Image 1 (tube, rainbow, N blue to C red):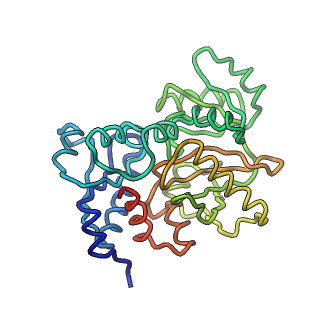
Image 2 (tube, rainbow, N blue to C red):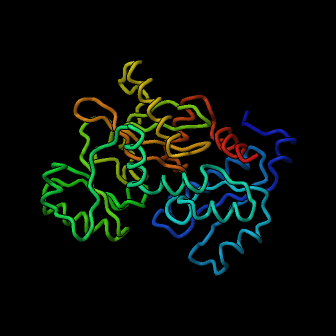
Length: 315
């Protein structure tokens, strides 16, 4: 029997706008996530409707869209800049519309890989060595300090957009040029050779850890959303001590950024087996390939229960 909320909960939640789409580089992923969230809420008995904010064919201003929607609260499932970075959160707070997920400051920090790393470092949490690349950067010095291979990342993008693993100075220059297509701020990071893990946080608890394995160079856009060859392993090979260490590290990292309700933290092990924090996702994907619903399912939480629990945080 499918999960349904009570009539009392339905009244309390009221009319819910599932805000998705937008105009960032992650629009297509957000459209898929939004469709899944909307369907899940409706199956659970929530009076929910979809709102493609800032879509390319929409001529209305975003604030007017929100006013015309007459919603009681919003489920935010926009990915990337303009929706996941604190901008929309600030608009909703101005309009006194409760919304899911992290607030303005934590959303802005979570979208900024550089400042996330700086904050974690200041809190004494482990994250891979890095360098910020700009017009005056000496790439030879960067390569000597970080070594090859390394990973190149746009600072303000998600879904691995614009990322590349490089093994030489020639590859480094090309990867930086490609990353600059998406962001004028580019981060170079030492490559972590150990296993990769992702951990979902839901209302203060760490859900089952997933170990990621892909035939690609790294867990890139195609591995995340297109390939069926990516392996998602709950038999992660960690001892009980290591597992507890990883879960506590993730909860600490999530809290230090100021994140709330739900999100996902990505972690890799270095050559010595030490955990290194990569990034935090404050509005992770909710597609049929996404990690949060997968982890929730392993914990016995149905998709409908998951989206309702996230939504109830706005009450």
